[in-house]
Length: 472
View (cartoon, rainbow, N blue to C red):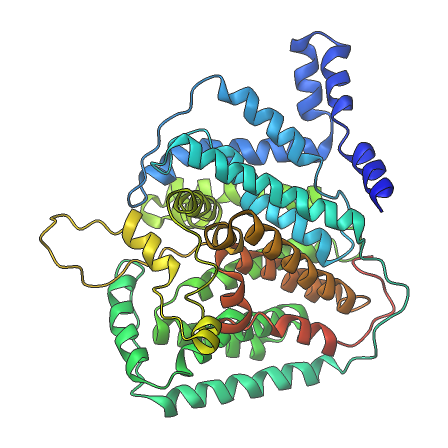
């Protein structure tokens, strides 16, 4: 295995080839060739440039963030890191494992490289570079695992059930969860704008604390997995009734729990659908993913230009692409300043060890983000600064937590790759990409158990087998 991994590493990540490209011509002629001759590399550079171009505006307008341009010497370092990262992702997409590597790169690794050398998050350079190091190591870990344990299976899994039956089961589970919400407490809908959303969350938290312990899980499973999965099925089957039911679920979760993640998931799934539906009869490559992200950012530019108060760039770029990287920076900073927690605040620790501890997201939120205007004013609530699986693994377990969570994430997508063989290609693509997005946005154990991400492999298992291979 060691010999095979070394051979693969030298062939795929061959830094000597980059060096030869630089030395073959003079530097002024070689640089454009190295950056833009390869199509995938060219799209990654354009994507990174658009993020760099928008970061000054979206971070300055965000609460607590001020953009400070980086010094000139850091730009060539960023280019070299982007060249290296472009060698770590697969060019072809054959299933969830490839999607894990590509979307992790698009959502986290490239944004981290872009912001690491500026002061966009008001954080010291050491913590920023530490977060960048872990992000690139995370990309390298997925690459190394994919080379050592390639997801190639010769036999199909057992036959699944019809797509209609899968939808009926999910609808039945959704009805049960909604019924439990109505039965478990004094439930009421509270529609609000995005500006008033956080004020309403305080009321929702009081309601949840006074209701049954299962109510938060009901909302989590509905908004985190059930409604997005049903919405995906509605798009794939062009079933307007199912789309309408999903729309009701979106409004129910948003008004009932004051969580905007459900709206973001619906927009993301719609975006994914239009990405993959154009390629349903052809091979989908990594270049198509990055090209779609480029067009999306340009479209948000136009929306922001013609509708200045729309917050299109703020929500579409800052919240979706920049904030996850910023949170990893703060979690890395927290890990260097405090002792490791090793998930002592999790429900498992409370159940088996009787440990009572404040969630690390609230500790980090109160320490770095929740700053009242006057020191004598009493705080009304805690600030919950949630990070994804990478940031949480660093703050909880350091390098060992990082390796453990990274390998577990790969195992999760390895199972998805096995179960998704010869299943509906568009469903497999959309739900796999959604799984990457929610893992980057939230902690791993929370997303799997509290948000119902565990339902994705179950859905893959129940999908009927097709004779066509994945996206071909």
